[in-house]
Length: 180
Length: 286
Image 1: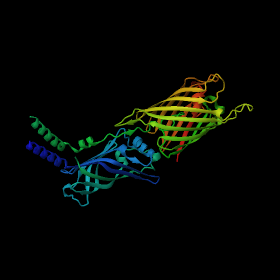
Image 2: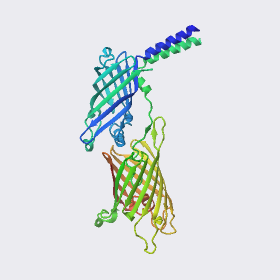
Image 3: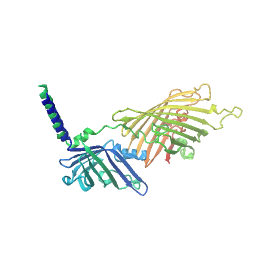
């Protein structure tokens, strides 16, 4: 009888440690910002999903486009209806690998993530500069980078071309915790 | 035996989680969010009549609508363009679901006030709901002096009330449909043959031609038309053009009036004989 409990306990511990090789968040922060002479447009998303495999340094991110919150409701409607077409392309996705992953530790370190960003159904290879902090209970990635609207086949009609920047700044902070 | 099975189960479950790749974990963790269906119609009007849409909180909108004279009135009247009716109005959104407004039409010098409340928004996701439901209620006061000076009607006599339930469904991203049961009460009518209470049902739809242009159609079937006049059902065709933040609507309709009691209960034009009023709606938000 005792033996059985020991086996169960050991197996549970094994499953626990196996799970610890993945760090995960579903409340990641991602925002984008468009600056133009006419107006600034900003949208925040606090429901980004991100997961890191600590054995390989691989990372995958998924963001629901409808979770981007704008200050003006009409902007949000136009973003979803006319530009990003959320009904056709509900998610943005990134999959890549954190460079020099094995050298990273609990000090803030600058590194790069190389991978593929998919927005509006179009994929593009990108390199993202990021700050990384790794502890036993946390992996924090933060930074910002720019994307070109034209790379993702998002059409901006000439009548509003002065309102929307051609280059969009994306800011992120992803606070991963052990995946259970 | 049971013990062995239990242990095997535990081993499987322990190894399984390790084998899952990152993508599939993300897919499993993605929670279906409850999303309100937006932009069932682009504007707060389908053409003449209201759509289920309400403006978002604190939105203050100035609306100008025009209906010219009848197209078949000939070149001398420049096909109706010489004759113009205007309604201008102010609409304010107290909340995302509740709007109030006042307006004034040059046709019969009529003032109108309405309240619009979105009761249910069509939703997709975890708790889906198949359609949107909005209540519309208005009161109008006709102030034109078209009466016998010896028989001046009271303020109350010249009031008319309208209640509508707007029921709309966005069937797919480019096609939306609305059914509008309508009740109109006239405090006074021209002759005793006319019923004070009018019951009508409206049908409206929108079809997107491109991302920013849509074709709209609207029809009101009036079940008990006034008998003292040659009343017809209101038919309208329109094009919505979205320019940045605003919607510009071009309209062809056999109705001259731009308020519910007018176009639903008092339309006299025959669309198919060319009694068509060209017009437009423009709105400007502050």
